[in-house]
Length: 216
Image: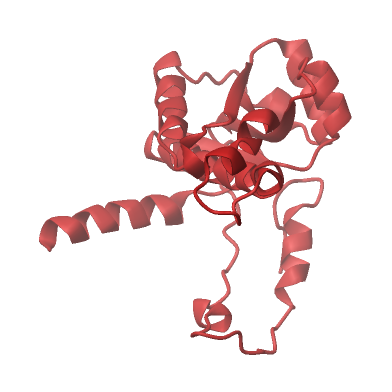
């Protein structure tokens, strides 16, 4: 039990330590070794029916990084020393229906749901691995799909799913308070609970142009 708790404490520390960082140090470098470890973590994420429909584009060219940043409407893909574009193979993800043993796992679910779940699992592995290596990160999924698709020469059979920027923070990021898990926990059935939505203002301010929350 002692060993299990030690492992839990280490993982819990990484989960709590990871923050979305929007300001990276200039002239920063992420080593090829660290990049390899981050990608290796993505490889070991769970995947629906083990189809592994994700591919990763390492953004190195400065002009290409600027194109991707413009598509994201955010500067981090061009200011961070390393950014990775996560791409999903829709044709491969859709095959989940062909190899499933039951009729509720369908091609449509593979293309419209499982591929995003696969991406989320892989990205979380990448973020936590980066944190363990003392590398900060920012996960972006809001962007102009058409612009990224064209800029990265992504075929019609694939879709862009996320851009992740990695580097070392130039200032301490804000750590927003989290909702009490009891407010979002139910047993057996969904029970209506009156949510305090005041925190939404905090969410808005975090995304102000300066990239961090100034006041609550």
